[in-house]
Image 1 (cartoon, one colour):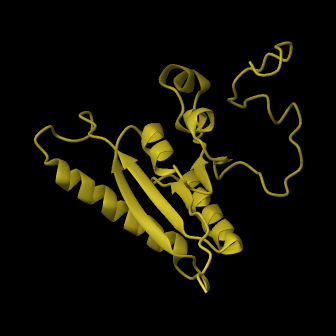
Image 2 (tube, rainbow, N blue to C red; image 1 turned 120 degrees about the horizontal axis):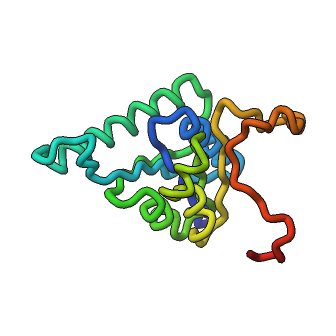
Length: 174
């Protein structure tokens, strides 16, 4: 009898604490669903960080090592693990994650903390994934924000929050 194979969970991984939390969440969910995890790091040559003469393969290898290190940190000490497939893709972050999620059960991404002006000008990977992915997208908040079993924040708590303004008068779907 053929074994039923469940679609994998794709999770975007970088070196941020929020991405580690997203990876942990994806691993836990994969155990519940009995499916694999595709841990994806998406990179592109950044001339502001890498010397232009550095070979692309060396940059790719560095990202692969960083992904392996993150996987080792997050999975160390766990009793059970799903099958985890590391994937390294050269692309723009959102485009690479969306492409990697084709045919997956879901895409898990971390929402990075940051100033809303920067996000408005530069865009947001998690926002682009939510808008354009063809699979359900789970967005994990930064690890310093309460989210599991936490009580709702008061207006005073949210006074300094960096969120997009919401037009509550706008018709649905806009």
